[in-house]
Length: 181
Image (cartoon, rainbow, N blue to C red):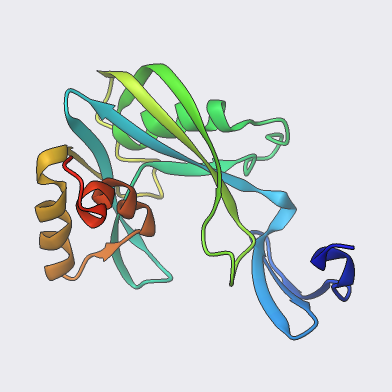
């Protein structure tokens, strides 16, 4: 018998259009409504990575992130998949398309608090096709950063009061692990 078999039933405490607050025994956690997940894009070309900066209401300030978007959040998008969402979001947010895509797997954002998962997709063979910047309701600034300057870039943004998304750890990995980039 697994731990999951011994869990009390899940209860919905509150449900909105996008978020559901749940309780299971003593645990309280949040999940995306309608089983919506996310696609996160690691777009790399010529020793540079694409990052986006946008205001995040829960933080009350801008945040530096990898480009990303929800899978199946639009009406009629129930059949959306990570790759099609990633292609759409990369172009919408950054103005780039990619010739090559690699599915790096599913990951969980903060498993002690939210059940949300995301699929990480690596994009290469980038071509600039538009300005990007997101939809009319978004105000996204695109940054193309040399991998050798990522550590300083993130530190400068942090000093400037910008939030740093946890996925930036991916880019800091070699330094944190004591390996060269």
